[in-house]
Image (cartoon, rainbow, N blue to C red; front, side, top):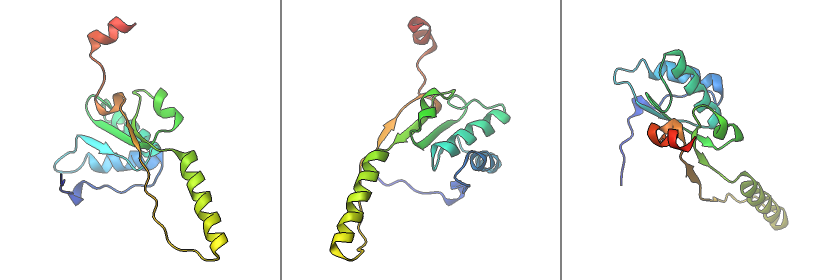
Length: 138
């Protein structure tokens, strides 16, 4: 399935919480206002949520937000952050193995490593459980 990329919807930012606030400020000024953001990392996503609240918009209800990294705070944020989970220990292990391989070979060859990631669905993407169900879980 091919998805078209609309360059006007790609809003660059610093890879930080402040960058996320600034990016959502610019995104909300677009002629065709977006309804969701897929962010560079979780810090940017937290900033997007902060910026949305400053505009009296509720992340996960009025606007969907997805991060990348699955930092510990993603689980406890309000709303809990939907994010792409990576395996940082596994990535570090593979990087160390690649480095040792290149040291032993006596040369540094470019090598691409592709690893799987996992989407962790939480409330910030709008997938909150039904309020009646939430009440029954209390």
